[in-house]
Length: 221
Image (cartoon, rainbow, N blue to C red; front, side, top):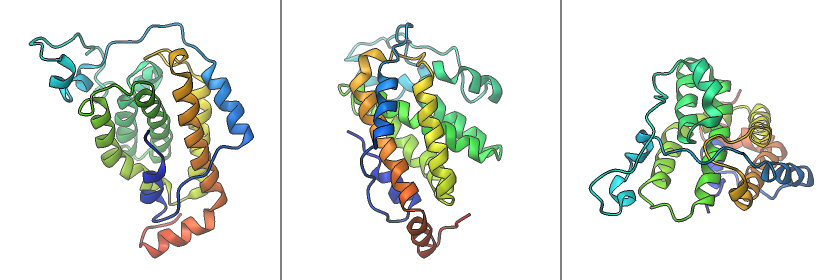
């Protein structure tokens, strides 16, 4: 299972791991887990399938069918935001990166956390995915896009926690058009609990986060 600890290492400059979810978070988890989507799972985007393709083809010469109908690097930002609930979780990272580059940094952090949550849920729900396919892509995106988002967000712990809470609420209220929620109930509850714990930790340790970042030479806002 992929924990939220590394996010703290990046953004908190050495703070400890997050604690457990509170009662309100548990109620939100249950609501999210019960929100089954009617649409069947969609085909993997071609850009995602390209990672570690030998592992997913199982030795076959032909690639399995993939979806290249959306290019997240080229579609207009407004349109990408509109369709993002129906996309593979990696597309949220591209959306966040593009928003950050456009100086829409707070929006970028919001969509990054929404996408990270849905990617963690996907990986927890599908533990049999070959390590060099979607799990490897997740690790790469966390190291590149995630490092930038976490370091920016951690400079304002109060806004950081509020943004994560909004992303958590959005996930609960928004159907997943990429794959149904119902088969992933346990993964949804587990990963939402982890994110709730991170939110609680940030809220409870705002002053210490700021001190640790200053000591590490990181800016505060």
